[in-house]
Length: 379
Ligand SMILES: [Zn+2]
Image (tube, rainbow, N blue to C red; front, side, top):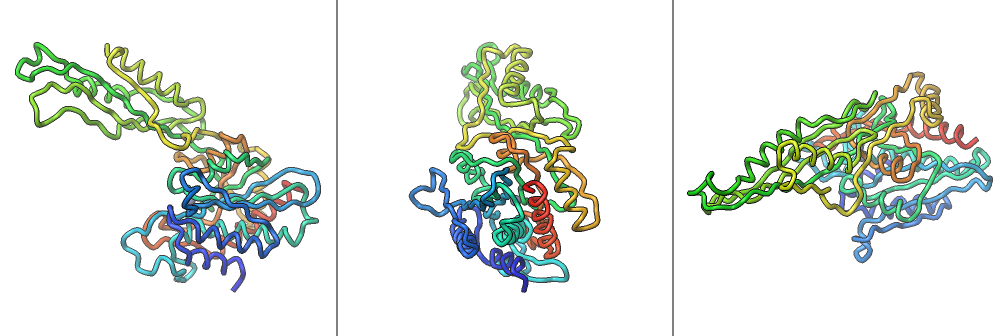
């Protein structure tokens, strides 16, 4: 069996469900050592005692001055979904499909990165500058692995995110924020309402409808942002009190030009238009890692066209650019670090579901596309 496929299968056999990344991190570290590369472990703050969720990264230096290309992928998977017909931790071949948890998302991408690294450890004369490889934890959660690498000062001139998308290369993503909105009313005995009291649920309902009607910016390719009121609560069924507070949870996808400040201002303006300006508080929902902002590369960016050329050489086919309505770790690299980032890697089917699968030929093609892209960027 070819080494790239053996590694892919090995990694499917290792349970690395989000929260349990250490065994796969150790496997990758072992493979890196076998290539004479030094693995560095990185732990995010919540995991410094337990050390169960490391990311691993390494650098391959050509010994010549030049730029840095980062190859990056996540080592965690989602949990096992219901409905698997095979053991999710046993790579199971079925025609040109290989079933297994992470077969698509994204252990094939990790195998392709390792293959590319191994090639260049044997051909240090074939590039200048450095190749950096990052194998990060917690992408399926809060991306704490990648944020920790940002904290530790990781940087590069180009990044290739080996996430599972093979029919196109993603060069832009929307961003996402969550907001907590509190609407205040006035409590009173329900028997005297509406002569006294002010119902926060009614005010909240009016505001919720107004929020979903708010405009968003548009982008030629990422189209536009969205508003979604995802949860509302308030009042008390057990007591005869006019509801005093209504809490609203709002989800917001954004395009470049929109951020948490513009969104909060929009909600406050909507409250003012309803005469609720003194009664509404809006804040970003607190979380341990920053929110993902939106970004988009130009389609004629060097990194994009170089990858497209490599794909054409390897497959004979065109690789169109695509813009993704969701968010992923690419947002962090592109926005927090300002690294031009493309997202392209071996794909398959059944992502985040039962009977997930990938294709060996895509894993191998991607390794070859990465190899050629690195050669051109670091020539
Ligand atoms: Zn993924």
